[in-house]
Image 1 (cartoon, rainbow, N blue to C red):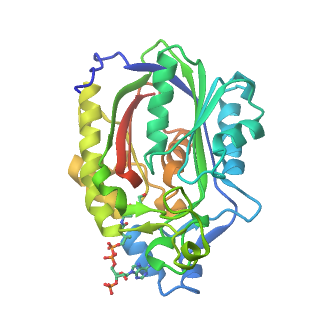
Image 2 (cartoon, protein in one colour):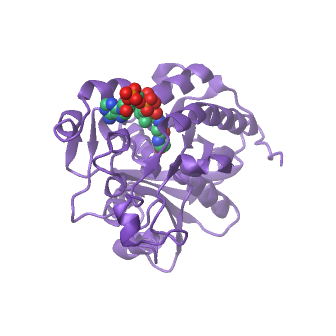
Length: 337
Ligand code: UT7
C-alpha cells in the first residue's frame, strides 16, 4: 500500500499535544551496584550500551501506579481532568495481569469517566503504534481528547542472574495528552512496520496460552525475558532508518527539516549508528539512556517529556520519533509541534 502523502504544511492527522508527563521510580540501580552480584563492570556496561544507571520500581509499585503518575502530570499540564478523556491507550508489553490488561487499572486509578481504554502491545514500538491509532481516532471523530501512555516494568521479568539482559532495562512511564486540532500541528507522517520473521529475537516464552505456567517452565527460567542481542542490534539501525525515511517521505519533508530525533533508547551504539546513517546532527538527537536505560514502551514518551519540560520544543518544530523492538515491530511517527 502506498500511503497518502501529507500536503506540505497540512498534517495527515491534525492534533495538538497539550500535555506531557513522565514518572521514574525513586530507586536507582547503578552499574557498580550490579557488579556487586553479577560478573559485569561499569566499564563494560557503559562502553557497550551507554547506560550508567536505571530506575527500578519498588515492591509496592506496579506499571499502573507509574502510568497513573505520568498521566496525572500530563493532564495537569494540559489543564484537563481524567473525566475529559474519551480515549486511553496504554502501550505495554507485560500487562498488569493476564486479564484484564493494564489500561482498566489505570482508568480506575485515574478516575476516568466513560471513555474507551485498551492496551496496545507492539514491543518497544508500542507507544508509536498507540500514538498513531489515537491520532487516527481523533481525526475520524471517534474521540476528542486522548491520553497515550507507555508504562513498563521489565525489571520484574528479567533474570537478575543473566548479565546479558538484566543490565539493559529500567522501569518508568511516559504520557501525552492529545486533543483534536485543526491547525498546522499534528502527525505529518507515519510508517509502522513489522518483520515477524524476527519474532524470536526477543520473547518471554512461558506464561501465555502457548506455554502455560507450570513448575517445569518456572524451573527452566522460561518466564524470563530472553533476547538475541546481536541479532536485534543488527536489525535495529536498518529498521529505524527505513521507517524514518518512509515517514518523512509521507510528510513531504527531508531529513534536514527534522528539529528533534527521539529514538528508542535501547543502546547508545544503536542510536549513534542510526544518527550516522541518517546524517542528523548530534545536537538534534535526544539521548537519556545513560540515566534511564531501556524503558521499552516508556522510552520515547519519557524522553519527549524531558525535552518539553526543558523548554526545548518550540511550536512548529518537526519531531521524528522512531522505535524498534519485540515482534519485530518498528516504526516512525513525524509530528509537527
Ligand atoms: O528494546 C529492544 C531490545 N533490546 C535491544 O535492542 C538490545 C540490542 N542489542 C544490544 O544492545 C547488544 O547486542 C548488547 C548490549 C545486548 C550486547 O552487546 P554486544 O556488543 O553485542 O556484546 P555480545 O553479546 O557480543 O557479548 C560480548 C561479550 C560476551 O563474552 P564473550 O563471549 O566474548 O566472552 C558476553 O558474554 O560480552 C559478554 N557480556 C558481558 N560482559 C560483561 C555480555 N553481557 C555482559 C555484561 N557484562 N553485562
